[in-house]
Length: 88
Image 1 (tube, rainbow, N blue to C red):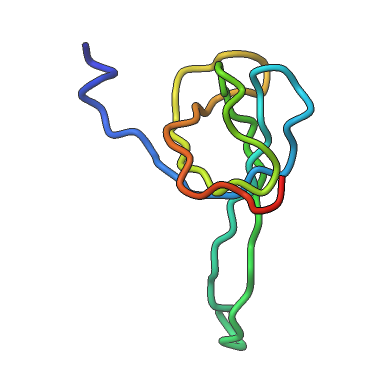
Image 2: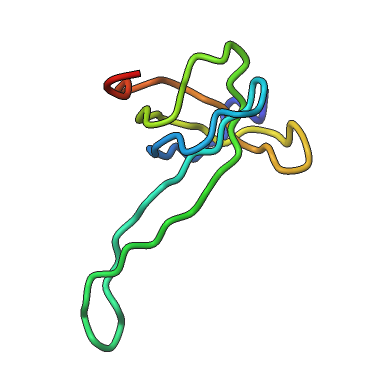
C-alpha cells in the first residue's frame, strides 16, 4: 500500500526498438540550457519498458511509468500509447 501512495515518475518518449517479446526500448528527449554558453542542448536517454501485450511498435509515442524492478534492466511499464506511428 505504501508504494501505491508514493509518487511515481512518468515520462513521454518514442519507441525505438520492439524486437523483444513484451519489452520495448523507449527514448526520452529533454531540452536543457548550457550553464555557461546558454545554448539549448538535447539530452536523450533510453529506458527498457515492459509491454505485456506487445501493443506498441517502433515510432509510437508512449507514456511510461516507473515501477519495481522487473528484470536486470526493466524498471518502467507502458502506461499508454499516445500516438501510433504512420505507415506501418
